[in-house]
Amino acid sequence: MKPHNIALLPAAGVGSRFGANIPKQYARLLNKPVLQHTIDLFAANPRISQIAVVVSPNDDWFDDCITLPPQAAVYRVGGNSRAESIANGLAYLLRHKIIGETDTVLVHDAARCCLPQTALNRLLDALEQDHENRGAILAIPVADTLKRQTPNAPHIAHTVSREYLWQAQTPQAFQAALLHRALQQTDLAQITDDASAIELLGIQPILVEGDSRNIKLTRPDDARLAAYFLQNPDN
Ligand code: CTP
Ligand code: MG
Image: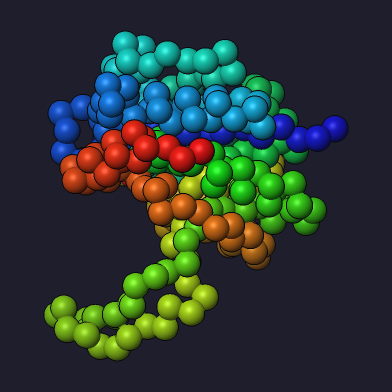
């Protein structure tokens, strides 16, 4: 049987750098919460069978702000870090047999609400060809010149070659059992994305061309750009 594609959306952060008076996933862009945009973009793709949203156990906003489509559900098992929220959510889904071990889990930041369908479909296409089960992530080849600074001051020590360097985005997608095993074996405090945990098992996930519009809402300025991208979809 063909594995199902499950979107796992970590949405348990506080959004401290964004500086709003509510967590950024509930901030409104074009009169709709960021998290709602993200849920809806996965709901609009027929290749995604389930959407699992992970929020904090103390979340006070979700019920008032978010409308879940039929294929989505919320799990109040968020942790103290992104990695913990994902590990908790995935463990819950597997333990309660809400998803199967061979299903594919696409982890995607709730705060990346502008992911174009074209980029999501490129990732799904790559996963269909991934017969070795390496998993795959969206990423962008580095465009700018990179400088490493000297240890004690912001002076240029040297230029770092950008050859073979990519910036990781999400979704990052892996077989559920593999990601679960990888996260169980990792010091969650040491990793900043999901692929890192897989790499520590000696597996080399596939890099799939992402999209420069797939920004993560991080600082206040990002809101205007995200609203622009949402208003001007080209797919
Ligand atoms: N996230 C999560 N659980 C946490 C921390 C983060 O589920 N304990 C989620 C966020 O809600 C977000 C994604 O992981 O969708 C990416 O994290 P980030 O952009 O760092 O969001 P925050 O941690 O909320 O923001 P900040 O770091 O500025 O506080
Ligand atoms: Mg954070």
